[in-house]
Length: 428
Image (cartoon, rainbow, N blue to C red; front, side, top):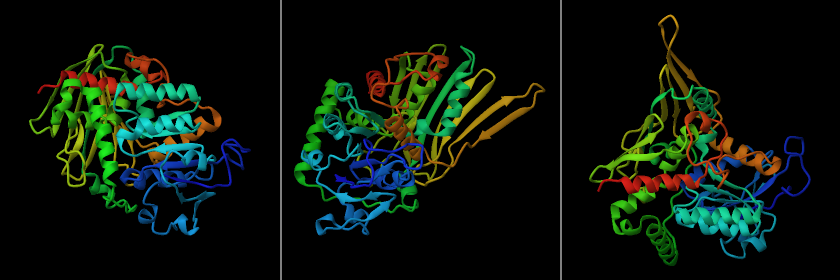
């Protein structure tokens, strides 16, 4: 972990909308591919009002221009932002009391312990998805959140895309019972197809201490045993669970916001090699179909993705949610987040009163979803704005499309509940 020494503080003077904005001091735990290509860059783009940046391990290797603080060096990296490496250890919080927000984007197995530790230290917490990979872990974070009174913000950036919000408005305005069918799809090319050409030049590391790898394995085994029970010894089920809790969380979380919690899983199946998985969800009056595939690569730790979400060897990011209503089709289409500024679009197919077929494509903005979610987090911390992707923004459990399109809160824990439903229904 590293920390920032800055010229502002969330508890100090400042105006989140004025000429002297509040500056949040941020520490990041985990600097992997996603952090280097998106999270490290996004705060700098909103640094005039939001973030002082701190980078985690291997800073010198990731950004050679960042001096080693052991040599007494700091480097300004944005408006009021200074980078410094600090060991990720228990004494971090005592050494760095000025930190306002801890961003957790390391391995999934560490999300719960590091989030709880940060909350107990009085810090706001941003957690890259998934928030937790067990129901018990989600409850631990929520209990720590309630006790601390601090914000927990889960990184479902797709739900902050303006095009997604446009689609949400249109689904909300549909008459009750108007939905015939919903399709959720996320079949994408290998990350390196896009990352290698994204201009961020992330570095991959392999020099992890053996005891750290062993610790992660122990944590992972415990999580799998808690989540899967008897299935925890099946390698294919292990892989399915970890991958449902990976990329698939984007789709399931967005699906929940658009149409609510499913009543049940009608069917869940996967190919013999686990490279493709299909899920049918029952809703009130319609079915939602979800698919995912992944052949994996030398760059991926896990070799499978589950759902209508996944990775294949084609250089296309094929991710969308489409709602088939009685008189129109409403669709949000995502492109890779690893290349900044690629548009996320909303599209509507319908028939005009005169019989003409109409196709409308809406591109609300080129502003990327990561930047938009940072702005939402900043507003929540500095202005008390509501957050829809927190650990427990309410108690909604199941609702129809019309109700869920309103700002009924969605529990991040509900993703784990849906994944449990999928695994219970999964054919061998």
